[in-house]
Image (cartoon, rainbow, N blue to C red; front, side, top):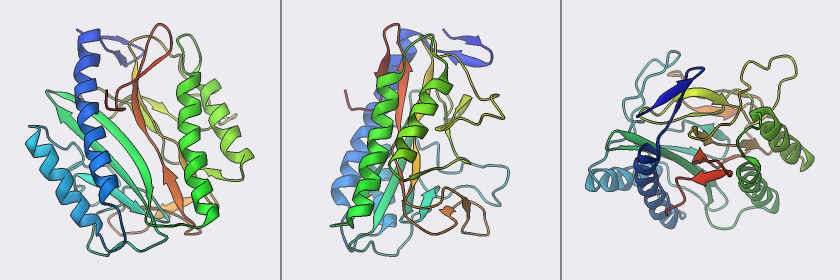
Amino acid sequence: MTSATNRIVLKSPREIELMRAAGRLVHKILSDLGGRVQPGVTTAELNRRAEELIAEAGAISPFKGYRIQQARTAFPASICASVNGEVVHGIPGDKPLRTGDVVSIDCGVRLKSYCGDSAATFAVGPVSPAVQRLLDVTREALALALREIRPGLRWSVVARKIQRFVESNGFGVVRNYVGHGIGQTMHESPSVPNYVDSTDRTDDFELVPGMTIAVEPMVTLGSPDTEYADRDKWIVVTKDRQPAAHFEHTIAVTASGVDILTDGR
């Protein structure tokens, strides 16, 4: 049974456990793909492996065939694989990964009518110290957000701490792409930004028990400004083509804080 507050769908304990099962599969897939990331591997190969694991589990990919208003075509793959300056929505392809690259893999599944969604950025062999620090700071930005979440808090308080942490380390916070509510569909209300816009607080909301959201900092080595790299308007890249990193967990807000649903438990 679900209930809604201001269009945000709250989940019952049973629904949260169904989402955890989906999140467990996402964690398994990301762990498997992360172990395969090395020079010479293609993101198309990673996508095929993800599709094998999704099918074996009796799940489906909500990414494949997904449509958005600005895109000319449906998304063609079961994962997003974004390399170097690609921020999100990278389309898997046959170009081999090279030493020094980074690849952000975003994976979602729908299992027994409920979704899980998670992302991680992987280094392809040794990377530069600046890029390694980018990965470390982005991962810690997500961890910071999860430590801060508790019922009764406004999301803007968490978002401000994410933004301050990232920018104090000399990196940029992407503005055009944010986290989201999640449940029986991949994208529900609310929008979950990683920054605070003092001129527009329409995205702000109160964290309440039963709320399930995907928290996903997207951080850039250089400018946070983005644009499309392809005419189909899927692949989002940094305007300066500097590398980006992306880490994400699906979580449930509890009476005492946060329950991570995509950590493999």
